[in-house]
Length: 301
Image (tube, rainbow, N blue to C red; front, side, top):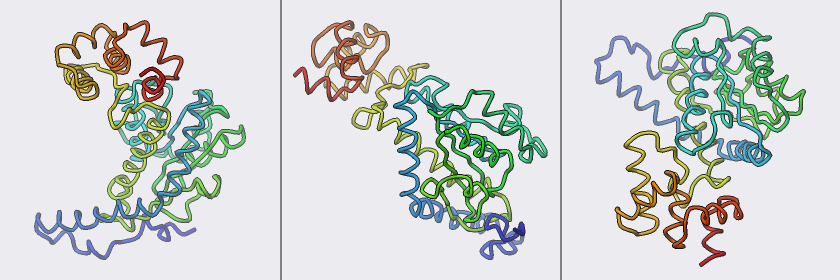
């Protein structure tokens, strides 16, 4: 296909002669286009839900979620993956991001690496990608060989696959099943071809949905609290203690004392306070109920 047939490569008439506009007019144009992004994401919620079910299946099989992309898309995948351990208390292996060019490419442009077909496959082999995992290819244009070949390899070994692109005729869509093709049609970019803008914003929204919803589905959220957050700094310690107060309606002093007694485990602290038991007893109940607080409370109140 001709390169300019892709949505991501077309000119946006809304931003015609943007270089002659005032500062306020420029940001008003950008803002007006950005408003279209969540509406574009809304149109593919059914496909996003399908992909989330794949991810949940992987997690329940002790598999992993792996993002793979180049440039902005790769960086966004790495970003989303890196935020899962502190938010949901999971291992850094459970959700991973692969970017063409490796960690160096997170801060630097690595010319031509997205065209390296072999590198995409090798990156998957290096992390021992297997049939329990879900591999999600992210590419705004949709044709990066690094990503396409990685998805082909994943399919060949029985790994679950999905794809995210801003182009309807993206090559990556040809290597995944239809129900797992997320086409976020955000239209042409304000700056022609600058897919770090609307396309990148759409990708960030979609990745947020995938990991957050999957973690909710496997019990990493209680009500709407980050029950398994990793309290690695004073802000998160205070958030943990306040969360215990909110859930159990105990005093801050009791929440703080129990939090440290539980070895800084919010989930265990909640059970200890609500059932008036010690840490070991709380651990037994949580293990018996697969960590589900609602089940623990329903079976023991």
